[in-house]
Image (cartoon, rainbow, N blue to C red; front, side, top):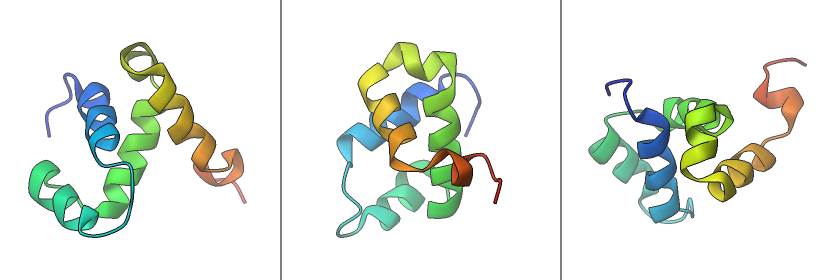
Length: 76
């Protein structure tokens, strides 16, 4: 996945597929070419980026609020 527009594309994908029910993991692999774990990491980075916040502020905030900051930042 190229870097240009990644936050916008990831947040748009999340908006189309907000639930983790069903075959969302398959869609992540097929449409984005990412493992689900990598998708979550990149989605959180996208949501925290200026580009992501400008593209979809509501979705970005929801993504950031979903994971507690201590986990999102990697601290324990």
